[in-house]
Image (cartoon, rainbow, N blue to C red):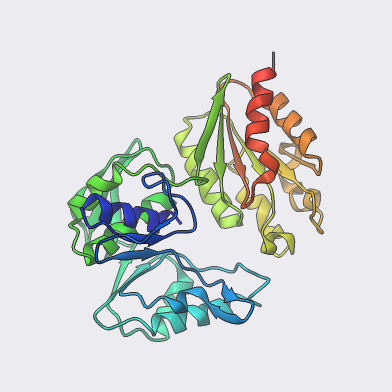
Length: 335
């Protein structure tokens, strides 16, 4: 969601008035979709099936000229039996792209490398690798943008994490294919305000900072926490997770969950509706991890634990029972 949001904003900042359809709400636009009046349309599309009557991946319905392949790993276990099945859908998609187009691919992703090795008619630019788009020296929240080792400019922003730097590289590369110079794209990214529910700041009460994040897969949880840890300068990080996606509910990712949470000083897991033992899955975290199926008790426990300077990140792909506002309200009541 973040990468197409960045790409749409770069095109907008360059005066190209793009249309877009994004599975989230970019803060720069405050809407998730619009028709636009320019020549470009940005779509967030993934491998999830189209409809109950059409089991093809959604992205097969979008005949793109510029395609960003950001990451590829096993998910949507209610749809796909394994990673190989997802790779096949990506293979079908890549073979629909024109020779005049461009594939912007994560050069560090082995699954994407396998997909491209199966055949690709389209030129490929890779990001996250020295021979393509990469980041140079970083300081604070900023980083240098490099293309084949040559400096293109520096992005100074407030977003956290290596995953967002990779998102930025992908968006810059895609925008360049649309005629936007890297320097213009960098200037746009410095004014990028993020996406709702992607490390969205929900409030600060009595020195406790509360974020809402859509992370619902171990990889997303891990990268989100790593980015927050790097930005908090030693402050405590409290992770609150709701394993709510179909894949997580099936328990297929439970063995990876504890490792994804190691950056957190304290972990709370909401277990309502789970058919697997969260306590066993998180046993390696020891006393750092707590489980409950009672939302009110969860809010009370977090409020009692949190102290001035803490960062609380709430991770779920759903509404999580309105826990964000409930927690902020409870914190305000604490003595």
